[in-house]
Image 1 (spheres, helix red, strand yellow):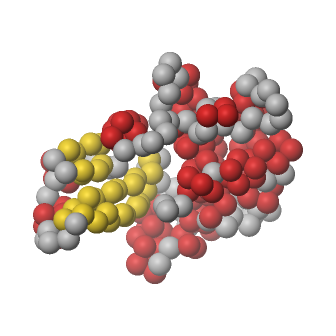
Image 2 (cartoon, one colour):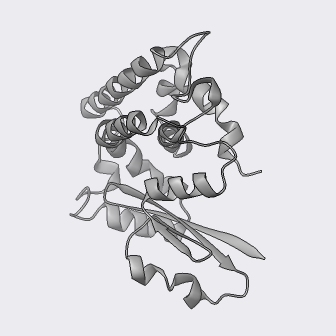
Image 3 (cartoon, rainbow, N blue to C red):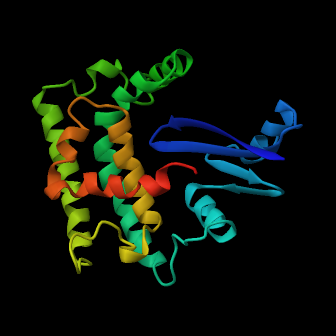
Amino acid sequence: MERAQQASAQTGRRSMFVLLATSSSSSCAEHLRFFTLLQTLPVIKDGDNIISDSYSIAEYLDHTYAPHSVFPPRTKACQAAVLHYLSTTLIPAFRPLIVPHAVNILDPRGAEYFRRTRESKAQFGCRLEEVLPLGTPEREAQWQKVEAALDTVAGWLEHSEADGVELFFGGKEGPMYADLVLAANLLWVQRTKVPDGWSRIAEWHDGRWAQLLDQFDAWIEVR
């Protein structure tokens, strides 16, 4: 009987998600053995298959297991453009606002590591509390960058609206991979409980982003 073990971390500007599909009788050494071959995250091991990179992992899982494809025919080029925008504009705008607060939802061991690595010169180079403190003009200016980035995304979605508000790039067929990446970053804001975060985003664009996460309930939890 196989079981899945999960671990998460973050380094630099890349989020890391690890899924180890291992047998219950495997040793810890066997669980970790294949990491030395790749030396990068995220990575999954599924049977004899080892796949690295978020996009490649998503393609593999979609092809192997998904009853609903998040890569419908003739959508990969469009999705690539959306993903490029999210990774180069929206996510960098979110990062200094959200990362300093993520430490508050970690256990003590995780919080110590998270703080030590994020406060290093390689990343923020200061205490997390000093990164865009609450109530400062600099922080408000950063939120304006986030809103402007989401303005662009909302504009794209409005082009596909027919009957009512269209929440997904995948339309009535359900979310595509680009939708999953967008929703994951909105959840990042919501679940880190940033004091001035989700409450404002939920009201932007006539509540579009709050509606989007409400619709994602069916995909967020494993049932």
